[in-house]
Length: 406
Image (tube, rainbow, N blue to C red; front, top):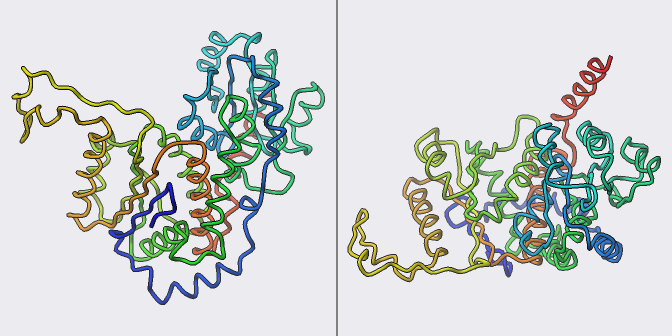
């Protein structure tokens, strides 16, 4: 279906959304409280003030892990060329990488942004001390976490997470990611507008035929129940591929509990056609295909084939066939060739197409995946907002650090 700027094609999913069994599930979902991420509106005026404060800062180092950075990574990947700043993502304590960043970025023209909702993440503490001589902006909750205590003790600049509780991976359209987004020059207001419009489209009261997030969630749930336990996610856009980690995190952390939920694998296309497509097409028959493309690229470039090269053959064509084709035509051909192969092999296939890349459409894109994830968890009877499978490892890390420190 089309939702203006975002088009979902489920025609080859092999699932009939008119199944009577879906009615009971949909009615149950409609009685669920509206998720907090869909009700929240960030303080756009405060975001503008932060942008003005750091307008002359050339280098921005953005530190975070998981939801604290995966949302911004996607935003920067798609819209970063709008920025006139040098942006570096820091999602590790790797000493070689930190040494490299320090060589590139001096304290005089750099802002380090530390993002941690709880303020108790071991990496954020390590990276605070690694960059303690730099100007620092903390994005955290106003709580008793170590990062907020450091912020108070050192009088660091701060941008607070929403006071209402929103699980970190769903906070891309809040101050968590939008503070940094605005600082580097991307219009957060347009992103919020796109997100709000998509929240209305995909909301709990929206009928199934008009709700792409619920359609996709029902389709994947049904496919899992008939044996499709893996999802081959293939993104035909370097810009949109920046959201790959966020999509995987949203789905794995929110849905994959109690031995339920599909495993996502795949990657950036067409590169993955040269390796992982082999497993998808010819390996175990437990994978469905989910393909993401962009209809209209930000930049357009046509190919020009010189006259003395036009008669050269490549497989079943001559190079003359490439003359005046756009690069977008070429990547569409890459997708269409793979799509046809999937259909010919009777593998369930889903296609999501974004009309264009802009702050507004990226806001819609993010909001779509938040609601899709939310519905996917509800359909399986699991909590969309916890992540019990990762908490124990965090506790183990602090225990190991304590022993090392002694």
